[in-house]
Image (cartoon, rainbow, N blue to C red; front, side, top):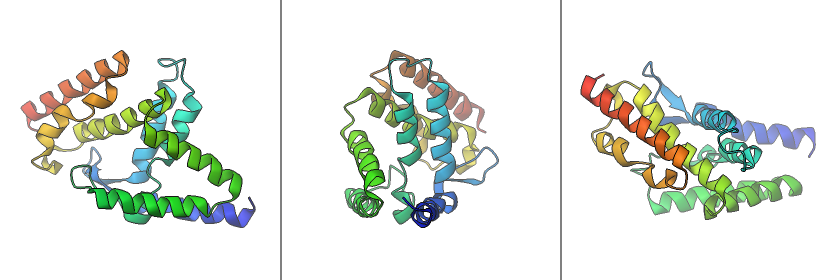
Amino acid sequence: MNGREFLDILHVAEKLKDTPRHCTTSKGRRESVAEHSWRISLMALLLRHEFPALDMDKVIKMCLIHDLGECFTGDIPVFKKTQADREKEHMLLTRWVSSLPDALAADLAALYAEMEKQETPEAKLYKALDKLEALIQHNESPLSTWEENEYELQKVYATDAVAFSPWLTVLRQEILQDTLDKIEEGV
């Protein structure tokens, strides 16, 4: 990869800094996709000792790249995203990845394939962290920013994604308790 190719990749990825997500920060500002990706990457780093048998560098890579497709489509909340939206994002991301220098394209394509299959412990952990971070962020955002359907979604979302891990299952329960407390307090 030469310097121009590297810069071109960064210019595409930079779009995630300006791509707003559905959720807001604790101060009520719309968070960006880049901020979400950063935090799930941090979560993976912090959990290195909780999951010593996993290749956490691979998990961090998955966390860093998981939403690159949103450079092309924007963020669509899970409860609004259609199959057509998923297919369009996949097609645009695949086209972009295949345009990258060969070695990098192969690395990213392999990661995306593993992430999509959801068969390895690393892929399962990345997906669980992706979903858990959204729940945590909603709990940190003002209740006034929640949509009506999110009150119930916060109670059930990601339960299936964490089932493979007793540690994550306990974490999910802690997040649920934070949700219930937030709703009860009304803030």
